[in-house]
Image (cartoon, rainbow, N blue to C red; front, top):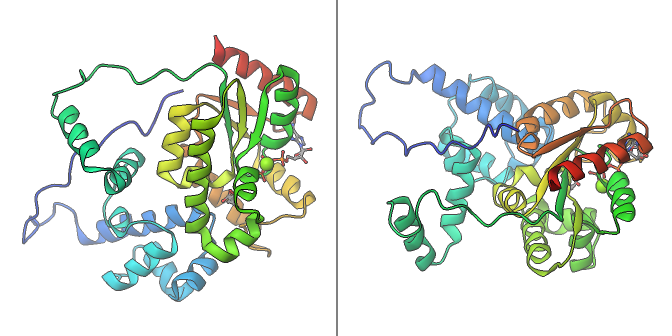
Length: 309
Ligand SMILES: Nc1ncnc2c1ncn2[C@@H]1O[C@H](COP(=O)(O)OP(=O)(O)OP(=O)(O)O)[C@@H](O)[C@H]1O
Ligand SMILES: O=C(O)C1=C[C@@H](O)[C@@H](O)[C@H](O)C1
Ligand SMILES: [Mg+2]
């Protein structure tokens, strides 16, 4: 699959006290800023109402900002960034997902690692064309929005292959002895994402033998976790149509993180549309729309066999 996020953008243009007139018109900049806020809100699965509640900024003002009409103050933007658990600099500039992930890695890396990264980027040390460790064939992870069928199909297919099957959400719950809902209440979305990264690291480091892992729908929203997943597993995007997502999730009695009101379907489509380029980074796709569970289980088994070749 073509990777639409493989470009690393050059550092921002040098700071000018006065930006040359016409280079980035103010209106275009505000429009792009609004689009970035809207996108990250959708990727996080937050309705405008929820973002307003968490950030303490009115829904009307957020609507203006997202529409490119609000020249937001840096203090309000910082509040919005905190509410979507994102560094404010990722909102003020256009950055690829690679770029965002690398920035987060730099922030938490030990000085020796940073020095090593500098050497590699400067063309010293490892040759630039040296390949990263290949992913073992028996490492498969399923990504996709809620109700896609990751748990249902993962369990069936792992059982048939005689592989270990793990659910990342369950591992997080097990490590804390709390349910996902309780973790959200106690630690918030940011806390949940940190626990998700820690559990994923444990699984990557501590599991031997073939493994099929079902991830939570929101993992693509956290660059560090998603990068780790993509570099440690062959990934398969399990997808379906918005209608089927909604029906399946409704049947399970779970509407998180969609608003439980008439806008739920609209929210779901927005989340799906914004997450699609991220899910599409997976190496293969299994579309379960209009398919029975049995048919999709064979589709998944086939996708795994193809990836292992
Ligand atoms: N072709 C299909 N493939 C998979 N599941 C299907 C299919 N058709 C109907 N379903 C139903 O859709 C639901 C899928 O739910 P499941 O919990 O497996 O999704 P999930 O991707 O794990 O979601 P979550 O992210 O919430 O964990 C199940 O109730 C399953 O029976
Ligand atoms: O799609 C989402 O945003 C989420 C899905 C769940 O699996 C959990 O990962 C969490 O509740 C977030
Ligand atoms: Mg599941």
